[in-house]
Image 1 (cartoon, one colour):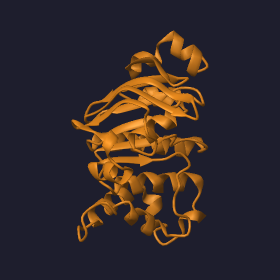
Image 2 (cartoon, one colour):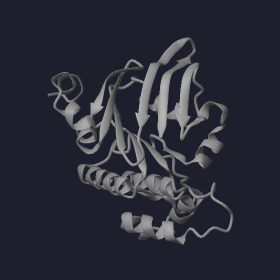
Image 3 (cartoon, helix red, strand yellow):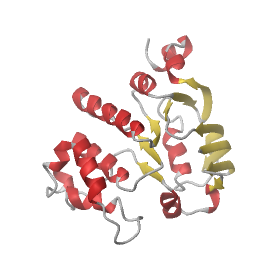
Image 4 (cartoon, helix red, strand yellow):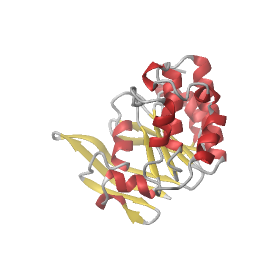
Length: 234
């Protein structure tokens, strides 16, 4: 469904991605783990068109994404929920959610998707008219994911969704990831909680210094001594 072939990205003469190969099949959850500065966020930004690659190819459903602008990539069905949530703080929860559907045809009813998201995140339903900037960090993360889902994504890319959240909220977010996958949405997850990510994902990649150093079935990587010693602190 989505593939990267020998992708290189450079910033100011320094390579952030070095020949990355990656693929996602429809309906699976793929995790990308690795240390800070490994290039994980750059990977997502490259797919979404926010960063231009210096070499290699990114293909989605048989089409080269390199010739498309970010808004066109969104319209193809690739939705990026960035690190830091980036909700619009002076707008209400409802307005933030509805803005997630901006790329869909005018006049199309959004009530069904909105109801599904509020069922997934009941706390947002209690705060629909509250300014997004007044929400807690966990609530803002719910809102950021919900806003992404309003676009009816084919691929949902999540950058560090559990970062800075309390353990109970982390449990909520990972439970939602299972729900999203069960709805048939393909998920590409960048996550600093490596153990939780590998326990949830179907397949996974380890990224270090811009290169893929390991890949495979997530459950197998979770038991791999090299991965456990280097990234899980075990």
